[in-house]
Length: 371
Image 1 (cartoon, rainbow, N blue to C red):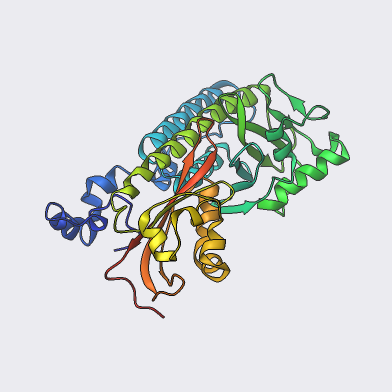
Image 2: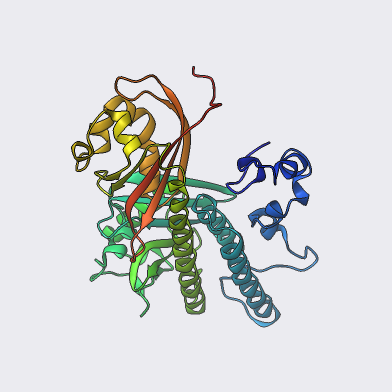
């Protein structure tokens, strides 16, 4: 079995679904209703009539080509709705979106920049160049023009601007030296070979606040028309819904982790990784009283070596809005190593930013052999 999904029968074995796990998970998976309900971006991209030319959804078009372009725009929006309805997992949703958009726009590269909070303590960049999608998560602020857009710090600019806050240019050479340098930082993060040409920066917003930026770039000059900008502005609005839907669905899952709260260590840390809530089992494992745990960082309680080797990468991904899991052997201070399935579930505030991480350590009876 390869890459089972979170709700696969093989991940939730019971007397009711063990036969389905045998028939579908290790057998005819294409007939499985769970598999059929998943959005597959490759199928969406290849779902074209090869006998009919399919123009890009952007660029100047006239006559019959314009009609075909409008049809392709409608098809892109329908695929976005399908993506929103079938795939709500942040791990793949953003990757599918940028690949889908790059295919329909036929540009050199598309990149999505997302921040976790207003102070941009962590960010995530999902970029697509050709058919290759890269996903990078890092701490700190966005050190480029996209970060300025999120901050609302674009008072002085030589870029074209719409009333909706979209910034764009059809010629890098017409921009100020400072803006060219800031845009080069954006491009170098994902696509170091592409310089110059046309670019559009679309804020991705929720409740009037920017939570990210969608950047579309191409080496061709004079690519975007004002009609293109208006259409892409609508796409960015839809993307905002995609991001918030994904984060909301991820946030609801955390309640499932409390089912085994008596048997397994559970802790909740805030965005600064300070422990705010822990259960009795966690206190027992670290041999500390409840009041001695709260208010301290997870690293201070577990020790640098355990935190850095096991928890650090999981927490960084969770701060960027992604639910993460990993199976590891953990030796609490003074105790033998035990195999745990560690789940980090981000919790989102009403404004759509990560304000806490719910962590559960589920003891695996038949864990992997320790190396």
